[in-house]
Length: 114
Image (tube, rainbow, N blue to C red):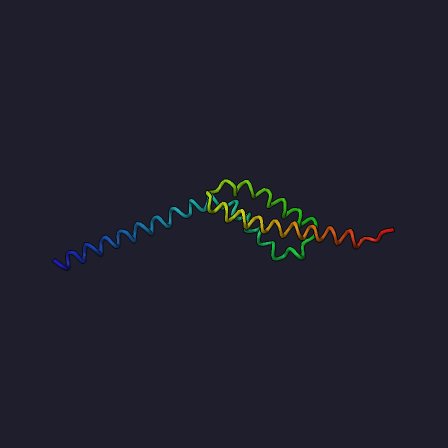
């Protein structure tokens, strides 16, 4: 009797694990594929913040434009991920804007005035 119960429980546990494994391998890949274009762009843009000090004016402008293009896509997400990714995007954008402002101030003060 105990062996039969043990076998039944083991079989149920195996079936649950198998069903979980199947759902984890199928569902995330399709869900991730739908999110991939904007997430990939997001990661590329925000990874540039490490190099923002070395970027030129044109590169900074392009990064700002990329941030602006990403914002509407992120605004379509559900509430929690939208808040998280919009905050992170805004932080990246603020850094690029600050560096652009610094670069343009430096270029105007560095040019000789007559």
